[in-house]
Image (cartoon, rainbow, N blue to C red; front, side):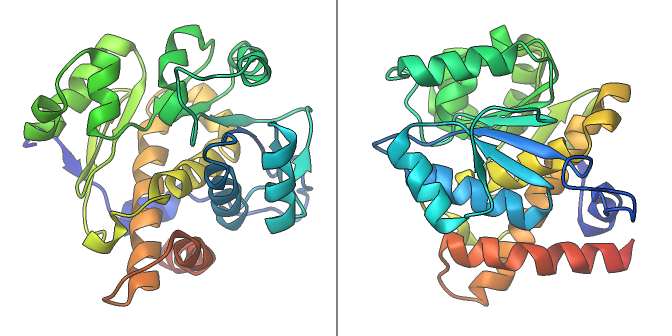
Length: 273
């Protein structure tokens, strides 16, 4: 961990895209989302909820009818269907062994567009097919599966394994945990401070939505600067952790509580910047 630099609120304040007077919903950033499944439909709902609260011009959701209906019931401003996007979030709430034909087709098209992409959960294996910059967001067990390493070895030294995975896979890695390690683009960053109450179902889905939104609103920056992915990934972790602190207030929280706090967290960061 000694080679990792602490990343906090002051650093994150400079990583938020503020809309200009000339912006519209397209120029602000459009995030494409391929998440959720019939088994885990809530992952799609939580990811979309987190993304729209982080600040994008639009979210386009691609998925099955049941999950699409649930997304629209919660966030009617989401658009269901294909179209131009500036970034992708793929894989939350999916099983890599049970990817259906429709999801596989959507993902194939997305990977070929060479756009900044977050790969989570059941899409971590798609990094090999990606044409553009990728950040993967595994927990210890998922990274162990991708690398063919026991989960216990990852947990024993997550900093080393985040760096190893980034080098071996050629992607930016955000390795989730109470301390979150980010490695990629020549940067090694660590974020801390999230409450232990954040160890709850759906927390990673919300993190994916926050990070996806940051990628979609910074697509041009990412294209020009390979290290931007790591900075944005660490910023997503900071926003996620601060929102959890506000939602928790020292006690249990739900992930929807967390997402509700995201706009206030971002406003606070911007006031620092």
